[in-house]
Image (cartoon, rainbow, N blue to C red):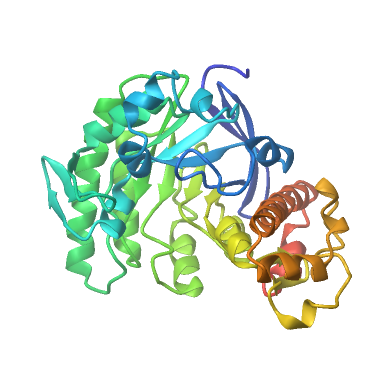
Length: 370
């Protein structure tokens, strides 16, 4: 166990790119950091011990999904999610707001009651208020808790984005009140505002006035281009609090991560490495590979010569192609593990280059390649 008190420190910088360390009650997180997504108390197709061996120092779980299945009571009898899923790493839980909007065909937003929706599983009615979201996350025993927010769809309608922002700021205050004082845990606010820089700055200012332990950037990775996303980060990079971690939610590709680190972001999560691993798409230092492609049928070279962990290089492209084209479970397991390992190798290289002051050169080399 590390120090029980949550803290963050920037160790060094290379232009806007930041090398830092987060202290939690369950260990250190070296930033920039990537969090594998364990939506339903599991990172799909990978053992948690292997997740740790990749160098992952924190994972993400999902409040909405865990609320529906298995339900808070089943997690609480294990004294929280860590023991339930046998995970010693710190866990960040999102608030569930995004899934309410994206998964439920029947939902209604009430300023005071919260999100009223029907489960995408069985249609059962639920009400998720800011207070209820915080209660669930505290019951899960998350190390980093997210405020309840409304994540609007990508739109150029500024009025809609402004109304959503105002609602999210109202819920952020209620989330902070419900969270109370928990020095061994952290509560992050979520900056909204769509692609409108003035709204983003307004949202950030209001959240800073409430005072959170970290600040996430929400409402991105919802259909905008990479250029549009990076423009939002450019507008915020001089205004984000220097002494608090910055988290870009749901992002993204290796190129997205490189671009965001260059603009001062510290934390990332995305389903891309695991989802891609289950469908045959591998991330490598030479770019992406669709291992199902027939050109790999007789290719006995390693998937990625730069990958050294888990003896993954003993599996040829030929063999992996065979596994995927015969729908073997091992195919998803091997490629998912490879992708998570690649992402963590990427993050480690990013941190090393920031420390050496060579991140700009590293960014130029790989931004359009990965």
